[in-house]
Image (cartoon, rainbow, N blue to C red; front, top):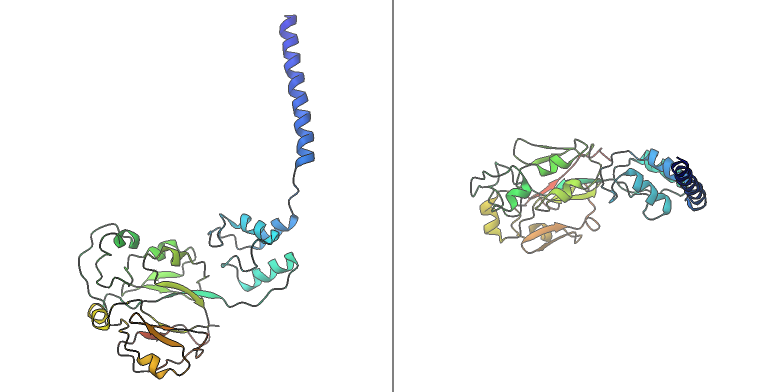
Length: 270
């Protein structure tokens, strides 16, 4: 009995000793968390969408406090939240333009031809591996709504023509739809950019127009009429340089034969 009691006391003593040592080590080695991290975390919108590149808002808050990322790290933050975070961090907030998603395609069911009947998984990504789905344009929207599924802000829905419709007021610029699109036809642009070539088709004009009524055919009419140098045509596809072409609500010409160049957004939305 004495040996059992002695063993129990010995084990208890060892346990108590380790507990004391661990307590001392914890006090000596613990890293105090900067109280700003909790404050910034509280100021963030709490979406935990991962658009900032971190697994959640708490990790983003820590990176902001440590100066590892800029104040615009969270694309979901509105101006008021950014101002609050800047005040917590004691830095001056630089004015930035809010970015929104833009769909660079008009190849809806009325404009684009079909090449086959797709019967696979209802997913743009899945269809992209099976001959690109049913639509004949290899550059345009597949129309299965992967971008809708990943949007946490109810900013995208599928329209009657089989194309995503983006609500610019709800869009936070988180870029999840950009990442989800296998055709890379959704891009983020400053909200004050309104003139776009809504096409990504790089086939020759005749081939492009054969599959879609709204395809850019590389005719260079926009390049010819624009004197700012903001429109160029490369690989049979026109593009706009918004740094040069700064006319928010004015098309370079009304002679585009396929209406591939369009105005996006409203004049009073800024």
